[in-house]
Image (cartoon, helix red, strand yellow):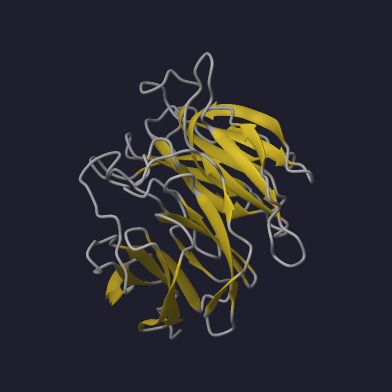
Length: 328
């Protein structure tokens, strides 16, 4: 890009009735943003709402993903059960096409090399894989569709349905985070791990672990492969507790080993998490803040600030999802 143009920011309107769009903003070297334009996905979103939980009707992370070369952008259309693909240019987006997601209510995408997987959160919840062609075309992987058997509703309950799919750094495993809570006799908050073979196909039955904290919302993986999961209510109590982050080792057989247990954010409604080098950051919808953690080589977590406030996003801002620039 020419001098002064160092990158771009994308967000989705999630509009209904076939009017879903991606908004592109140019990001200057000083962080200032300027509008490039809005670009139709050709599909329908799930709509928007003014407050939690409906401020994020998808209840997810990674509804937009970009390839490593930053030439392709993939987006879910939850209302029309589709994935849209855009070719990225300095001055806008060009819609390459769209495909059916293979399920109901797609909410999250995971990309590794030329392999894309989508999480469909509606009903029993499913995942499905696609081969990514050099020009961005998506070819469904026949036989890759798997049901998670969560027994959910359509449209999904954002407090219960799975909200995140992610690849491990080596691309050999897929992680799916299912929201929910723990009661005396039942646990609905789970982490599913599926192993991917050399053909890009997942095993038929995931290895499932009950998550450590209450209402695990999203996940991010460190370069070393440690799994970080942000929990809306952490250690609890449910509805009134502050958020937390737990870290895990992902074993080759798909089982998980807990490293750090629900390290408190001391903030309200902690929902989204991203890794940047040796640090992880969480956005807190209810506290209008960002919480930072330092990551140990062993996957352990240490709060950067004693009160959990690494940065404030402004009164009434209610941060919803975020991203880290490629250069960190």
